[in-house]
Image (cartoon, rainbow, N blue to C red; front, top):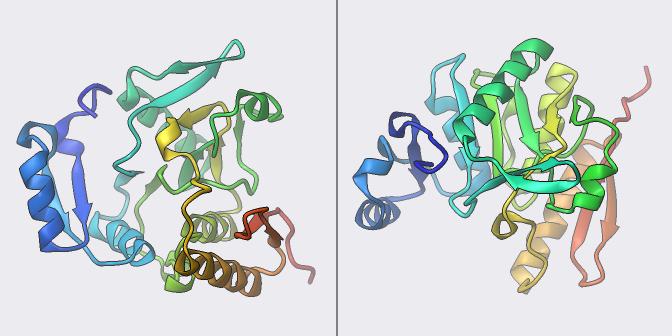
Length: 231
C-alpha cells in the first residue's frame, strides 16, 4: 500500500488469532501499517467483525493480503493503477453520487470479458469479489454473512447489499493481479464439500437470485442474477 500511496495511518491488518498477529508483526515493517487487530476465525465471521469494528459512516476498503496490484482497462489494455489511494477515493465518491453503500471490481483480468461489459461502472446485481471491495460501515444485521456461505461469502455479501440498497457499484474496467484471481486447482474433498454446502445455502436463501452450475473439475458454482420476486 505504500507503493499505492496509501497513508499507513489508514491501514489495519486483521488476523484471526494471536499467533497470526505475531507472524505479521515479525515480517511486516511497522512503517507500513497503523495497527494489527485480532478478530475472529472464519472468513464470514471476520468480515462481519471488520464491518462492526469501524464507526458508522466510516469508509472501509477490504483488501486481501495476496492482492499486490490493481489494474485498469485503458484503450483495450490493462495498465497498473499507480495511485491506489486516489482510486479508492473516487470509488467512494461514486457511492456518494449513487446513494449506494458498497463497491467492487471485476472478478477476472480478462480484457475480452471486460470489454464485453456494457458499462464501465454498473449498479445492477453483479458479483463483487471479496478480495478487493469497499463499503460504508453501518450497523445492520441484515448485512451479516452466515457461516454456511463460507467459500462463497462474497456472493452472499453482494446479494445482501443489493437487496438492502437496490444496487451495488462495480468497476467493470478495474481488476486485481493474477494472484488474487479465483483459484481452480488443488481442491480437496473438504473444499469441494464447503463449496457445495455454500452453493446449496445460497440457492435456498436467495432462490430468485442464484443459479447453480458445476465446473468440469466437479466444483459446485453459482451465478447471480437480478431477478426480484413477484408480489
